[in-house]
Length: 339
Image 1: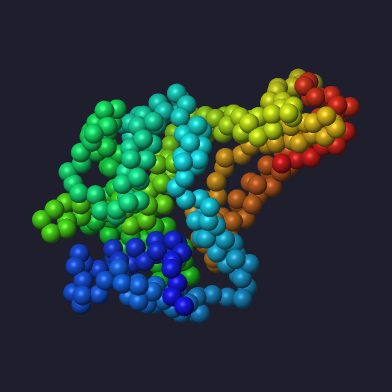
Image 2 (image 1 turned 30 degrees about the vertical axis):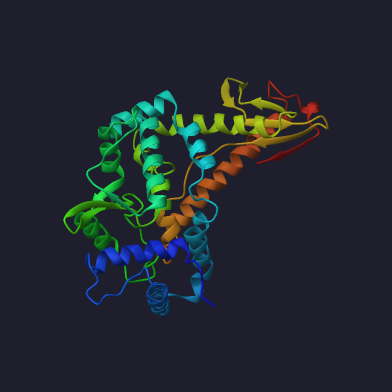
């Protein structure tokens, strides 16, 4: 039976190989628009990946390989372009302080980056080709804004090909090595006598102007705290909207002796005196943690960080049980849990 679709992570790998090894016109007349050609090409890439793992794989790192497979595939499942996801990232990122960082780094406000991204995504979901030069009929987004957004999200095919070639690995990281299409999902190239912009994987474009902005800003010292505070506020807003009948308490400062400490970010409680302690963390796993098979050092470091976050919650819970929380007495919540 003919399959009607191919997983997007395989399509991203295919797009990289096409850019690396193919010219603008197929000399043999083969076309990936033909299902049999597309399926056969993906099958060959899968076989190559299998042969590579036969040589570099080891029974000793099967568990690490399972972690890699999960990180490679899970992000594509239920994380595609949706209006709800765009709104969520806009609410988290579009604060005056973060928007100012965005304007300093990119030359556009956060709203302008996301608005241009949404407009381009809308086009590429209907057609993979955008004819250049750019035009705009949106009063709030003149063509100069789109040019700045395209400079952020697009790249000429020649330098992009050079980047992809430097990233290519024919070892256990063949399918897991970083792919610059994540940073530059729009490819600028010639098609006949015309200049065009092509977006091979629209999901990568969606990620670029939403979650991908994190990596543009994380080098700014002030961003980490601003992002954490904004995400924490968003979590509280989401809890209020989802469970308006529950009592929600925000973070408070309390003292033990002369030492100031912060309570858990949110406490959700109900009439039965049950309490849910919620701590918000925005730290992300590093790329080498998700793709490395033989070197488990980065994975162990990130697991250590996650473990310290768990310990932090238990310590603040102990402070609560000892009666140090100013906004929730210990007899107000008979049953407590952590999240």
